[in-house]
Image (cartoon, rainbow, N blue to C red; front, side, top):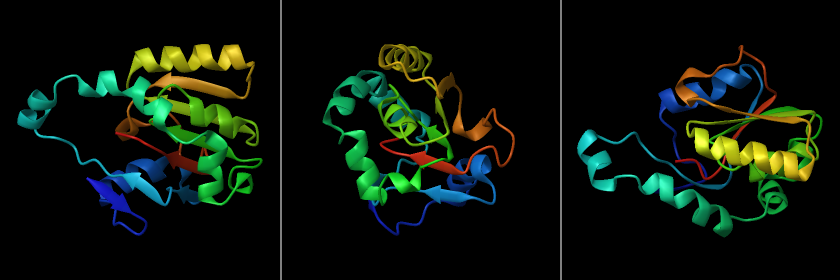
Length: 154
């Protein structure tokens, strides 16, 4: 369901995102889709749609610098340690890396993480690392990041 700026995010989702930036900034774009965990019935009816959508949705997304501008510009990420939750193919993380000190991309899908790593190698970006994992169980210590971003995250 679409949500708009100021939409209240359930506490458990916010705490999962904030765990990586405890005591620091947490950024959400002004427009985003908020997805609540689905029941088994809903998951069965949707099937593997999430596995087929990323390539198409990535092509439809705004360019990374346009997303950054929507959030207030590159100063938001400049010289920061950034976690991109639900990073997908890494396009936003790679765009952010031009300004950030370090970027970590985390996504539950190992296939898209492999694509993100390939994209980073092709682009020659060295201050980004990608890993497969869940936002509910972050593989990072508390306060490891200055900023956590979630954009177009299912």
